[in-house]
Length: 427
Image (cartoon, rainbow, N blue to C red; front, side, top):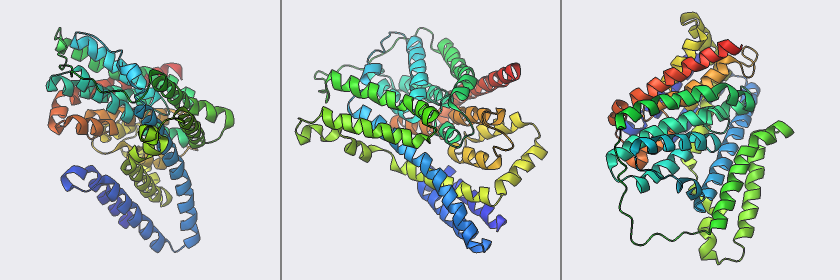
């Protein structure tokens, strides 16, 4: 049974990694893998009650992550529909590319910490089309945005789906992860920014020609600002809600979603249906990336089988025996996330090591959060942010590897070193 389960998982993993050459959605591969794994487990186990108990427990953990992601993505879509992000992006004005690079990098870093790396990348790459005329400049900025968004998402529990998984799973806590990873994440961004500043020199910003007739805004300034600040307040308030009530984060995000829904309905109460339809939360629900949600369901349920059959714990023991050093093992996991999706890697890590072995906020979990969150920047396919940028600007895989990959690797290794030194100094 264990051999069959391992082979099925490896094949499903390869199908996910080779999504683009195979022309098969990674969501389909994840669901097929989960279906086959649970089928083999059920048929080979012989203990129906145990299998069903394992399935129910796995479903509960997966559902918490999925509900949280759906709520967060919907809130961001509502803010975006009201053009709330213009309040942030319209203030970015400079005449030098190097100065613009620093501004964009820091805005993406902190915006990603509040929202998430995927949303931040979409917003910032879209903004670059309005600020930069040369495609070469836009591609370079898109690469820096991916690095900044992934670095910014790693140090907060809501900034990256992998950190969110560790947070919901109880491996990390809000204040501890922010204190521990902020400096390492900042160094991860600063190294590429310093290098690119020398590369760009005094090159000027070449802005695109303005259209004669600007597109009419769908929302008033009051509506844009209200929905922006309310949406951000809800997202930032989720960790506080969890700390005060001790309820899981998905309850906080759903509670906030209900408040945002009510405010939106009251805000547009007197508008005609055709004017408010695209601003409603119901419309926002149709815009969230359900393919990604389904992928998370499939991969988390697939990894759960490896956990229940003790394949992951055996792998952890093998790594400890062969590699030995915990920091090197986690660094390898981070580099692997540049090649394959970091979600299954973190899910596998959560199954490989238990909270009994490594308590909440221990070195292992915090370093996994950093490495898995930022290691994906090294290649364009290594993170959701990279894949989004790839689609928006049609970035070539090898162009990114040549121009951006080295910068991302330098930042990744420097940040990892900073975290290890910081941990040893304060522990």
